[in-house]
Amino acid sequence: MTASDIQTSFIFLLIASYTLQLWLSRRHIKHIQDHRAAVPAAFANKISLEAHQKAADYTMTRSKFGMLELSFASILLVIWTLGGGLQLLDDFMRSFEFSPILTGIAVIFGLGLISGFLDLPFTLYKTFVIEEKFGFNRLTLKMFITDTLKSTAIMLVIGLPFLYFVLWLMDLRDVSPYWWLYVWGSWFGFSMLMMWLYPAFIAPIFNKFTPLDEPELKSKITQLLERCGFTSNGVFIMDGSKRSSHGNAYFTGFGSNKRIVFFDTLLNSLQHNEIEAVLAHELGHFKRNHIKKRIFTMALMSLGGLALLAWLIDQTFIYEGLGVSQVSSHMALILFMLVTPLISIFLTPIFSLMSRKHEFEADEFAAENTDANNLITALVKLYEENSNTLTPDPLYSAFYDSHPPAPVRVAHLARL
Image (tube, rainbow, N blue to C red; front, side):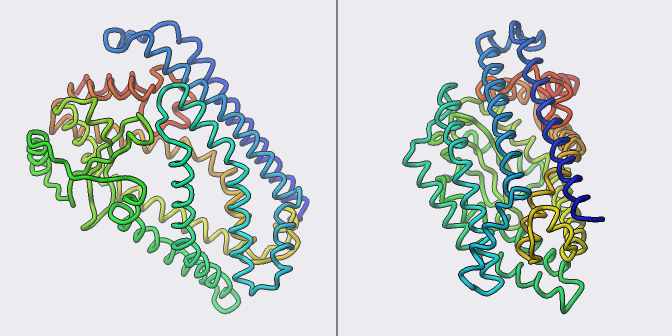
């Protein structure tokens, strides 16, 4: 294989990926527009036409903007690779004559900084125009800047030392052919550590978490946890309303740092029985071992990816085909991260299917331990308040959606 073959393959993958995603988005928008005029029969007595049309408009607006983001990202990818952007950045950082590892860190950090800056207008527009237009945004510009600075600081404090260690391991390839296994073990261990640290040490940097203190609801939740044989580090309320009116609940952490988190917006909109049902669904993910399965899948895929990287890293024709003239650990890592999404997008339906299966199983667990009708009414409220469309394009939904479409999910719960 030659550099020309790599270049041709890259262009083909880019066009195929871009065309597929654009086609699916256009289908999705058309399908929603075609069904905007009437509320689906299953929800006719539950959701108003006004709320249904707001959800349709919100989804279509986000999808159209997503198509613009996709186009920009595709053009930028070509500029970084075939256009010589990465090579230019690499040459600039090498001119400072740092050590190879520090040069690599500088290149990766520079790439992230430039990409983040170029992506900033899209992020600002989504937050302060689209979310604002539909009444969801509560984030101020000051808070946005503060969040960005906090995220950057955390990345520098935690991410840079780990990146240094990874690049050091990659440079051991002349000494040991198993360097990629060392990288994989380090990455997996780091990921597990971050999962453990996040709930108690990182998330509170951005949000305030207070223990649930409503006696009646707390008693109901405690009884549910006892019935399900689940122990945690507590049930917490997160002040999500200071950034968005979207509501949610999630289970996070593992070991001694497991905790259940409710957005305050969700607690304000649901009855106690509905909150209990939502929590039972979240517990279903734990009791059906979905967390462990996802961790195992993530570990297996990362192992396969690093094994592939171990073969690609010294193939000079790959670098040349993607606009880079000099072999290096940091450039191999960058190219791998940039190109992999062009391939992994075609695996998306498989993971979406697996995720929807897990959602059905969690719903079944909730129905076994609470009243399924309470989960139905809770979901309907959340669909309406979050403006989730009730009429997604079936093919788009099958490709992307991690949760079953609203009509399918509600019908499944009704049968239970």
